[in-house]
Length: 276
Ligand SMILES: Nc1ncnc2c1ncn2[C@@H]1O[C@H](COP(=O)(O)OP(=O)(O)OP(=O)(O)O)[C@@H](O)[C@H]1O
Image 1 (tube, protein in one colour):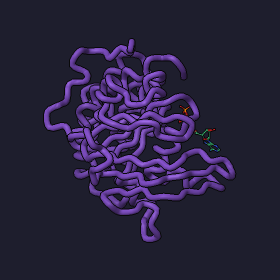
Image 2 (tube, helix red, strand yellow):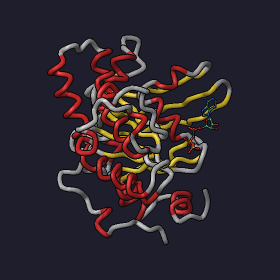
Image 3 (cartoon, protein in one colour):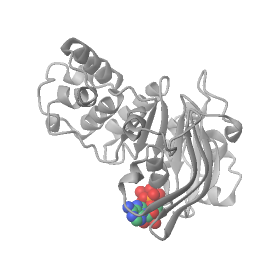
Image 4 (cartoon, protein in one colour):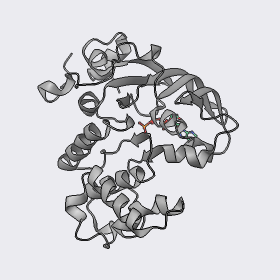
């Protein structure tokens, strides 16, 4: 195998990291059970099952069009917004079926936040971007909002760069800063899970590093699922990796195992660059 894993310590298990040697036997924060998914008549996902441990990072990898983003969007029902889609199977959050009839979708998306590939701050001030979610949820107390905005900007490692210009437009920030602002905005609704769809693919190496460092910090408190095309990034930031191919999960396991000792030949071919 010739895959570059970056820093030598990249795959060392972190202190207190969950034991992912048997991910499918865990209850998990999130559990996907026998999921099939269709866009109209086109089936995009086939019999997907995987478990995401609390306070861990799971990476979805695989070639373009294999269903990574589709599964990610199913985890907070973003695909509900697309007409003509159909799902069978279950997605459990803390043991509760998020597609169950009693599920409040607005509350679900508060609990499961999302950060997209292209940063998409609102054309408002830095402060208002972070305060937006809590305001919509009814928070009017200025002192509490100030405190929340400060905390989330600190958590997103942006505070030092913006603390003197909270009233400036978010659109004046660099791409990397905008992406961290979007992470701060996602944190402001107090989520349990953060979904990230290629959060660093549009960023330069320094900003990418900042996002990767941030993911390492955030997993102390949040459960994170990230889609990435960058296998070295998956190896660096994740505890668990799922390799997708043509709508199926070919292999899921502890990142170190998937990269160093893949069980499936398809996984090995992909991570060694033989296809995709
Ligand atoms: N809104 C949609 N309507 C119809 N088909 C879709 C839609 N979104 C995705 N698909 C199809 O579903 C399949 C899986 O797409 P998806 O975007 O999940 O793949 P991906 O692995 O995330 O790809 P990429 O790495 O290129 O982002 C593809 O065949 C794609 O064309």
